[in-house]
Every structure is written in C-alpha cells, then in structure tokens.
Image 1: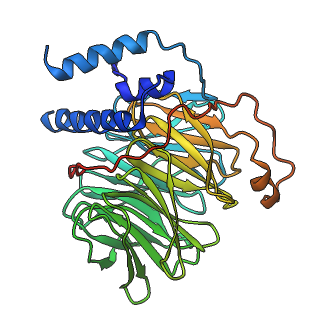
Image 2 (image 1 turned 135 degrees about the horizontal axis):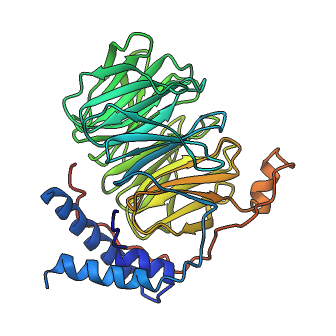
Length: 42
Length: 356
C-alpha cells in the first residue's frame, strides 16, 4: 500500500480555505522544492 | 519534528477530514508510484498511463479495467503516446531510451537508443512514420518508426527539452525547454525557424492547435502562453494557476485548452475569450499531465498521487458551443467541476526548477 500525503497547497485549494494567492503560491513553491529535495535524497 | 515530517503529518491530518466533495467519473488505480503521463488512443478505446514504477498500464477508459501492462523500461516512464492509427504506443523513459510497442498485443517492437540522458517527451508525426523525442541531454531527436534508426537531431536548447510537438501538417516541430524558451524547427531543413521568448522559467509543455494556427506553452512561471504559429508573436498569456503549469492539451475541435498544475487543479480555458471555463480538483497531489478524450467529452489527468482520473467536461459555454459542430454532444452525467476558490493575483516564480 502506498501512503500519499496530500500537499497542503492541494488541501487549501480543495477546501477553499481563504488565503491570498501570493501566500498560496509561496506554499506551492516551498512544497514543490521540498518534494524535489526529498525525491533527490531517495 | 523535522520539517518534512511536519508537513506530512499536517497533510495526512487534512486528508482525513476531506469531505470528498468533488468526484471524478472514474479513478484508475494500479500504479505504485507517480503517474507522469496519460494518453487516449485516437479511437478512444484505450487509455495508457506512464509511471515512475517503470511500467505503462493500458486500460479500458470506459471501465478502468486493466488490459495489459507494458514492462521493459528500467527506470521511470516519463511519457506515453499512441500512434495516429492506434496500432502502436511510444514511451519515453529516464533509462535514456524510448520504446515502441504493439498496442494490441503489448509486444515490444523497437528500442530507440542514442540519447545521453532521460527522455522527457515522445510524439508520433501526423503520418505516423516518424517519432520525435526531447531529452535532458538538451537535444531533440527524430527517429524512423519502421527501422528504429535515428534520422536527425535538433540542437540549440541549452537545458533539458521537456516537451515536443509536431504541427498538424508535420512540417514543423516545436520544443519547450528548461532554458525558458520555446523553439520552432523546420523538419525538412532541420534548422531553427524561431525562438519564442516570454516565459520566465522552465517550459514544461508545448502543443499546436488542431488547425496549426496557434502554439500553446505551459511554464513553471505559472502561466500559459499562446503564440501565433505563423510568425511566433505572442497572442495571449493565461494566468490563473497558482503553481507551475505542468501540461496542456488542445481539444480536438480547437475550442478549448486544458491545463494541469502543481496547484492540484486541472483547468479548461475557452479559447474564444481565453477565459477560465472550468476547474477540476480531486487529486490528492500534484498533477503531471492532462489530455482530452477523442470526442472531447472527457478529460484524463495523471498525478503524483499514483492515480489517473477521468472527468466529464461540462457543457461548453455558449461562445464555445457556437464554434462547435457537434450539437449531438451528450450532456454530462455528473460534472466534477467547482468554482474558482482563489484569487488570481500572481507572484513571479523566483526559484528554478531543479533539473531531473
């Protein structure tokens, strides 16, 4: 079984959590970089 | 707690309370890792998906039932495409090869070797006789489908080539690269026709409109850009995604453009006014690819969440409907569409996408 942790930015989009788009975009970028780093470590 | 663990814990916690408000028509599971690409056969009978689990799964798009699995690549499969006559499937992999398979039997027909790094994109020419591949070795290569021999190389990009596309008449090839440019190549002379500059970060995906008049490119800078294919002049910039735009596809009637992003959403844009017409959300992770079904009634999306989802496209807006010649198009049974939930202020992307 593969456990998939949903990125916070995806959750924010899907729940319609009110957040300004600049902060949201920063979330996406940060999580993307984080995921890339984790992927590179594998 | 380390930062990655914190984010995983928070993500899982939010996942647990997700009310599952939006449902796609079908979620296709089976891959054990990230799904990088998806494509319908031109006759609509098969759907192929390519994954980091090194396989390609072929399913019936009506039921999602597995028909066969293509095994042979020794690393992530990054792209998959059907030939125009439905008979063959081409795949591109991080193992530095592209492969051609018999779509009916799943038998491996050819292995294309020559690239020096991962191959990110593969496309058949409109006549089905050639294949183009784009690679992390910064080149585009052209291959003879009947022999598997390399028959040309297009050099000029200064970073990874992430996407390639043939013009509908097969005379021009367009490529998108991590050097932030889109380049158009004359396939007779193998010379560069023009370089399209505008994106401020990696170009992830490129496509020609079905009539060949428009070029579209999707970037890590969160924008989609439309270009006049005849002269390369910028036509429009579409903003609305809040993350890197990973893939795009024109509908077969040319009235709509679909895009997929790391913000977790796929969107449809009405090309009559370049306005966002619909958004599709439901994947639990970033999206990697999007494609229209041959009859333009469904979208297929591929995601890091290891699934492929099929979505019913809602009835087109009046402007788009006027341009369509398909009055018999079926009404959607269960649209999985939501309204926009975030504003469209833009923030320039400041960090460079790392090379794979």
